[in-house]
Every structure is written in C-alpha cells, then in structure tokens.
Image (cartoon, rainbow, N blue to C red; front, side, top):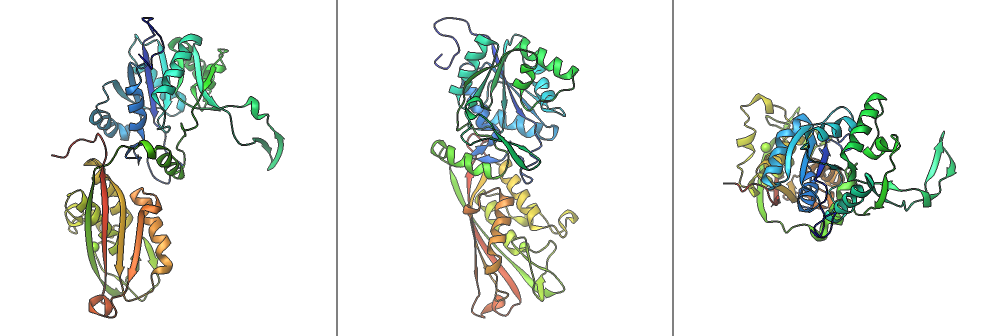
Length: 406
Ligand code: MG
C-alpha cells in the first residue's frame, strides 16, 4: 500500500490507466518510438512496467495504431503485465485516442490516469502522487517549472519575456475522476476542440486541475536524439543484459557499369559491386553478424536471391528488416564493429556517412557503430581490385522479459 492513494484501510477509488501509444512518430526519422528499444527494452514497456508496479493502479488499457496492435499485445503478454485489460485502436486526434481508451476501462473504474507512452521514465511514485491528488480534487497533473527563460514570439521577433515563476511544463500521467474526463471529452467533441493533453480539455469545462510536483527525469521522446537522453537517464537502472556475439563476412565482385555502394553511401568509382541486391557488402556483413549473434541463420536464408522482392534491395532495407527479425526473437543490437577490405578507392572520407547510415537503420547511437578500412597491400582479390570484402562483429542483447526462444 506504500504507493497507494489512501492510507490505513481507507478505500481508494478503483483506478485505471490509459497508456496512449497511438502517435505517428512523425519527428522520429522513420523509427516507431513506442517500440524502439531504449535502455534494454521497448519504450512502451518502460511505462507499462511502471503502472504494473504501482499499487495505486488496478487496470491498464493501451491505445495504439491498428498496425501495431498485434506487436503491442505480444509485448504486454510477454512482459507478464497482468493489469493490461485491453489494447484498443487510437483515433485521428489525441482526444479521440484517449476517449477510445476511456471506453475500454471497466465500468467500475472511478479514477482515470492518462499517460503518454513517449514518457518511458515515469515512476510508480509519480503515478501514485497524481492518483492521490486527483482522488481528492477531481483533476490533477504533474508539472515542472521551466528552467529556461521563455519568450513570446511574433513575426520572428521576441516580443515578451514570460514570467517563468507562473509557468509549468505539463507532464503525464494526468489524473481525473471519470465523470470529469467524460464531460471534458463530450465538450471537446461538441466544440471540435483538440488539445495536446487531457488537462487542456478539462480546464475549458471550468474544472480546476491541481498541479502536483512532476519529475525532471520524466522526459518525452519526440526526436531521435531524445532516445540518447533517455538511455543516459535510465543507464543506472537498466537491467543487466544477456549479450551474445556474432560474426559476418561478405564478398562481392567489382564490375564496370554498377554503382559502388558501401554502408549506404554511393562512392564515385569506375567500378561497382555486382549482386542481386545493391551488393552493399558492408551492410551485408553487418546483417550477417547480427543474425549470427542471435543464431538466426544468415542473409541467404532471410533474403534469398531467388525472391524478386529482394532484387536491387537496398542495404538499408535489409538492415531494418534484420533488426525486426532480431526483435521478434527477443534481441536488440548492442554494438557493431566492421572492417572493409578494398584496395581502392580511399574510403576514409566516407566513414562518418557510413556510421550514420548503419546507426540510423540499426536504431543505435553512433557511438555504438564502428567502421574501419584496410587495403590488402595489393595481395589477393581485394588487392587486384577484383572485389571488395567486409567483415563485421556484432553484440546483440536479449530484451529483458522477451519470450524465451525455444
Ligand atoms: Mg552480399
């Protein structure tokens, strides 16, 4: 009962959490933020486990996009989240999504907590604090005082400095008596009002929303850089990861009339690599190393060159798909180190672009990706410029609480 809203024997209201994971991750460079692994587990799972562990919460409803439904269901099941009642589909707007969530809570639920899944570092303590306040006042949200000076802008000019002492940054979860939230949704629907949080809907119905102390660590993931922030903040508490190592090696022949593509970078050169796909020997070696780490076969098994789907397939497509194959078996890439053996051209000027490419499609920080180059002193097929070889080694980590691979 330590986290509970009520003390000694007082009944606290039955409380349901709506975890909203229905956004389109539009500023995430193609990553789906709720399923992206950070600090050893998918973003969404961090929030689910915080609500699961919080004694003030009785049930959880997850709102997500139709195409993620199956994976979100599997994630909740594999993590043993016993409080998850339903996974429901989101709507066109934020308010519509949370309204769908409200409809899926059991009818006995009196207190509702709405949480944005993009805030994975929420703690059971913060959840309990909001729930306790909302149970008393009817509506509560966690806020933190802004640390920067905030300006009002008009036409590219700073026209006013706002009084920082009067401002709060709104966080989630936000808590409401069920009736308060239902009325706010109905009013918003009637007035075609869409707010960026639930509190803004409730405020306009005239119900005061109490502010409780937020948590500076409860950051929101909006752009890919935020993943590194969350990783760093969670670093101390990340569960130890069971890791495994894999090795990959690939060779392609150099021929005239083909572009030379290495690590996703097209490099000006009189010859290019021959293959069914784009023949990106570096990407291929990295994929094989990752698959090898999880003992999931090789590129030939997953992307057979007899399958027209993979004809001219870009390395980026194979990398992204390899990450999905790994994830479906409960693994995530941890780090990658690769060496390309080529007599010519000089590749070092393209290193940064190759690292960025690999890091982007492997969903890793660039500090976990290494690309190196060597010639073979004119020895062998690489030395005679008949082909280019790449080898790679990769560490993969088990996603904690992922299903055991049989
Ligand atoms: Mg190959």
